[in-house]
Image (tube, rainbow, N blue to C red; front, side, top):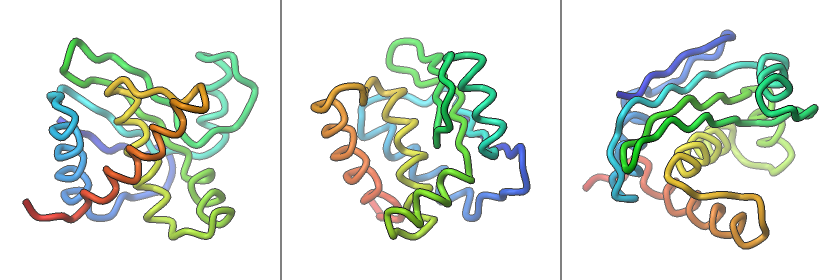
Length: 139
């Protein structure tokens, strides 16, 4: 089950398309869907989570809490819409493209991909691009 929640006034458009896409991505990584919760919020909300649970005194676009068991993906993915908006402007991309990148970044973390080292980060970017390509693709 994939749930979409909002702690601000953001509403995800085309929820069904996102749900279908996320399921395709999970399947493409040979994982099974358990329960994944997306929580859209603002900078302040995510900053407090970052400070409380990770002891990071910084703003971020995403925090994933992984509760997966084996190949079954379970977790909570918090996304700051403020950061996604700013990143889209900074990188000169559409908001919807940046949102997809961040949303799938969380799924890739649940699949076991990291981004702490240069090589991990390069693989993460490659996987993000590959998985974004699956959006709206008919099988």
